[in-house]
Length: 303
View: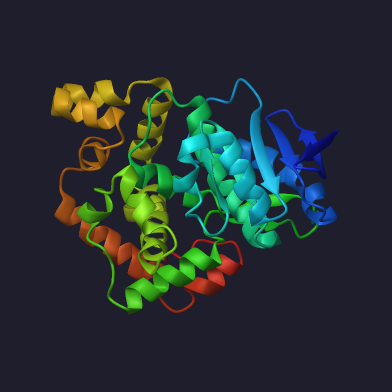
């Protein structure tokens, strides 16, 4: 249907899970984004375990330019806009709405998948995830390629994320791998400081790899914990579980996204030294010679 923003003619496209508002004139993007977002939503509820589906359409805005996006951000977020206007590329999600702008076809779709995960958890989850897990899964959801036989259809392949992989390999080769416990301790406000700098790229590459590690590392011994922590947050059982084991203060921190270390200890392992060594070995294995060829082909690089 027609939609106008600040005098610019656009469209609003409705799908079972979304209302997509866009001023984008690219026929390719407008044609592909509804199917992409709908299949991304399917991926969110199935890729890492059986998670609940949204019970209402979620609003996603894809603006043709950063200037339009900035104007929309000020309009929809009011005094909080100055925080978001520090973002130089892509967009953000807040209160179940995603506000994005065109940064090139490939990256725009990847950003839509990333912010779509935040939009989904904000809309559906009864309790928040710790920062490392929320952002790590969002990065995990970015990977996709267009189907070889049906080029309008995306296939979501979490390893097929060349930008994250190349940065991870650079981190390994530059001996900048962050200790596991440090990765787990970031707070929401820390992400604002990470925006638009080299540390942010290192951080996101590593938490992207951390979700892969929990999904398939060490013969899959952490996979059940990954599914369980996501389901507990979705169902409102996360803080109760943390509190029963680690006490009321940890439960309070969990409700504020601040119990990253405690949640890892409860759902995965208390042996951070061992898990850190396993993770470092996993990352080095993934980035060894031939790893990039595997992810380009849509396969896991782990041998």
